[in-house]
Image (cartoon, rainbow, N blue to C red):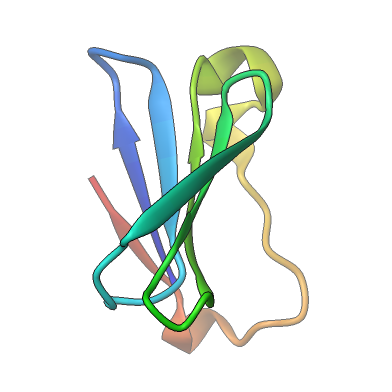
Length: 72
């Protein structure tokens, strides 16, 4: 899992898989889910992310910190 933040568009992309996306669905205003050819969820795009969460204190529970990579 990788987190990509784009400050110019205030967009947060949560990459769940490196598979190529072939389909997207907006499930809420500003929240788009990306799917691969098998229909598996591969990413979540959140527009206006700083309005939704405090990006300075993103927290992840239940995963060992050794496998978490933050990409800027």
